[in-house]
Every structure is written in C-alpha cells, then in structure tokens.
Length: 314
Ligand code: NAP
Image (cartoon, rainbow, N blue to C red; front, side, top):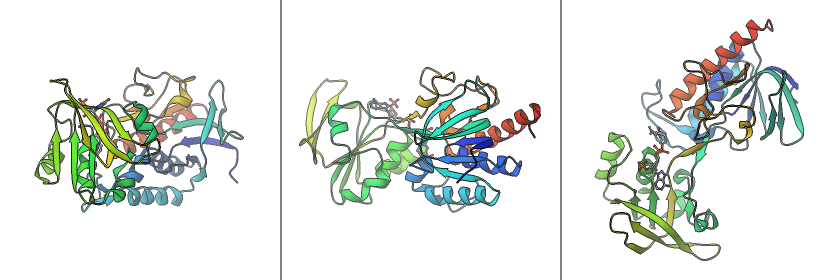
C-alpha cells in the first residue's frame, strides 16, 4: 500500500509520466506514479518505433514502455494502478482520488494523462465498435485475415495502420477527406508502394452498415466533390482521424485551449496553478511524439523540483 502523502504525484504512465518519474526519483522526490487501467498510453498499441533516439534498430512500443518503467522503478518510483476519478487543486496539498474512494495528497502534481483516439460521431460507429469497427489496428488487425478493410484518415496514424493491416487483410482502402495526405513523406511513399493499399480521395464516411451488434458488412462513402454516395462491401473499418487530450478531469481547475489541451507557460510545463505541471500529449497539440513527450516529462520533473525547493519543501 502506498503512502497517501507525497512530494509529487505523477498522473499517467506514457513516456511523459515515466520520464518525469525517472527525473523526480533521481531528484529524491520519491514520486507516486498513478497508472490507469490502460497503462503505458498510446505506445502500448504501437508496433515499430523507429524514431526514438537510442534504438538504432527500432523498438516495439510496449518494449519501450517496459524499458522506461523498469528505469523508473530502479530509482524508487512508487507505482499505483487505478483510475484517477477526481482531483481537487483548490489548495495545497493537492488531492487526487483514485477509483472513487482512495485519496492521495501531494505538494506538487505532474499531469501526463495523454490523449486518445477521436471518432467520427456516427451512431453505427459506436454500435459496431468491437464488431468490425476499431480505433486500433495493432490491437484488432489480426481478426481481419483475408478481409477487406477501410482505414479512415490521412495522417501518420491512418497510413501506418493501413500499412500494418496489409499483413492480414486482402485489401486495405485508405479513405481521406482531401486529395493530399497529412502523413510524413516516408510513410506516404511506403503506402503508395504497397500493392494491397488503395486510396480513395475526397471521400468521407456517412454510415457504417451491419446488424444491431455486427458484424460490419459495408460502408457508405460520399465523394465530397461530386456529392455522390456509394455503398461498398467492407469487413472492417478502422478510424484513425487523430486524438483528443484526456483532460476532462482537470477542466474545472486548469486553463485549457479551445481543443481541450492544458495550457502551459511557454518554455515551461507550468499550468495556471503553481505546483501543477503538465507534460506530454495533454498539453501538446503540435508535436505529439514519444520523444517530445519524454522531453516535457523531464522538464516537468525539474520544474516540480525547483517549485518545491522554492517553497522550502526539500
Ligand atoms: P493527425 O495528424 O491529426 O491526422 C488526422 C487525420 O484525420 C488528418 O488527415 C485529418 O484530415 C483526418 N480527419 C480528422 N478529422 C476527420 C473527420 N472528422 N473525418 C475524416 N477525416 C478526419 O492525427 P494522427 O495521424 O493520429 O497523428 C497524431 C500525431 O502523432 C501526429 O503528430 C503524428 O505525426 C504523430 N504520429 C507519428 C507517427 C510516426 O512518426 N511513426 C505515427 C503515428 C502518429 P485533414 O488532413 O484533412 O485534416
């Protein structure tokens, strides 16, 4: 059982939170890191990570998280598994409630709760989620062996998922609302060179077809230039249209931007509440990379340490 009173509590266990833990622990702050039910964040549903410095041959997302976690454990980070259900930042020590009934307090907080996949907002998408609709190719791709699947989106995630799905599916159709991909050039080139991938430009999804509880049988697609709507046979639909930050718990206390990201003072991880810091995808609408998340996690731990020193706590 963890102590309930801490110098610093870190909320979230992706690269930002785990890096903050390494730095805070090495700063002798004995951090408590709260990892939610989906510990490790988005890297846990990623396959090859080829752009994290230090891994010349690449590394699998879950292996990278495991390495980071073991590093944080080496320096006396206290890990707690549970979902943060509310926080009270009205006064210090700050309160963090886990699973509704366990309260922990800390003199400083680092929020690194990450972001999650956005959905299209169709009734059929919610109804058929897990029955042919998915937001994670690496989790569900295996179920689409020799099937026809659609991937929706034009960014790195969509293109990466489309390439990954060619391992299983007989055909992958990438549906993008414009005629230029947002994805990085290297991923685009790889997709264009992959024979199983077909592109559908200027196209949006108007409905996903299937029984009340699945499976997916088809998809209605509209060409935004001609307004023509056509029905296509589909076995699976992967939504990959971006991410939204996990900040609902904090909106009562912290200033957020118009897309819900926590606002931090430029060049630091300070929020509008002294002693509360934010790192990683919760505060980054621009870069959203594992390495930038780790970088801001490091910054948050140093900011917290200096804050506590300034308050005469350490
Ligand atoms: P993203 O870059 O925001 O791209 C989202 C894509 O979905 C865009 O192409 C967007 O279209 C489309 N979209 C958004 N809302 C839509 C809607 N309602 N209907 C149809 N299409 C919609 O998100 P992401 O691909 O998840 O990437 C997020 C960040 O992670 C990026 O910084 C990316 O570089 C990074 N990432 C990196 C890697 C890698 O380096 N290997 C892998 C994955 C992600 P428009 O283009 O028209 O806006």
